[in-house]
Image (cartoon, rainbow, N blue to C red; front, top):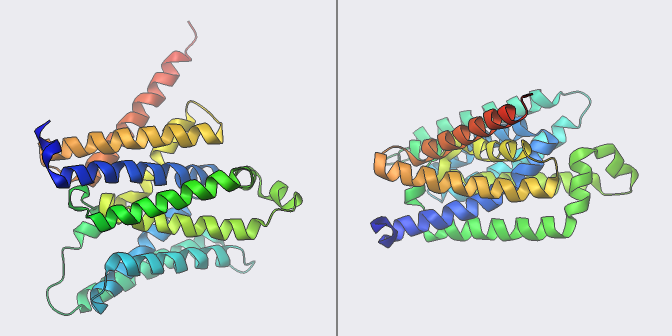
Length: 269
């Protein structure tokens, strides 16, 4: 393929691999623990950091990371309080982050960059800095899950059982929320704020059709994520369509085909 000669496409392929690894690992915890709505809240809250970064003239990804981590910790803290429901806490940070992002992006001095790049992403524009950030996040996730895989599984499936075993459940929950926030921000340039939640859930849902084993779901979802990222990237290049939307669309098609195929296989003869 001639396009493999181009540096931007090589960066995109490497970014697709790193994104698949990061999302495959932390996304399995999100789906198993049923934190999809929380991840959506953190994703949209990160837009507040993007707006602040544009206003202050610093890297929007850096400020989005800081804003996302504090939002994740805020959601985790508020959701554990008896005087506020979890969905209310998520909605509060979701709305607050979007409002802050819109206000500060329009207050930013000079020419305001195209916000659609942060909302919908463009894998073909990722830089070596983006790849470095994704690489660091992936390595940290691999190391953390390799060392603490059993406690993470206990907490993902039965929080109270993990607590009865003397595990520091609260510490693990905050650490995992920290990694969720970092992964979301790391993927913004790939698929954008609007679509990143899908990359954290759809490959894992597809893998869950074939196995309930936590570790196997991680491996399968990484493979599915990589396949969909590369396939969507190639489709976006040749069809001249947005890469983020193309990746998510292919992910949903793969899920639908897998779901239908499993149902046909299980039909009585």
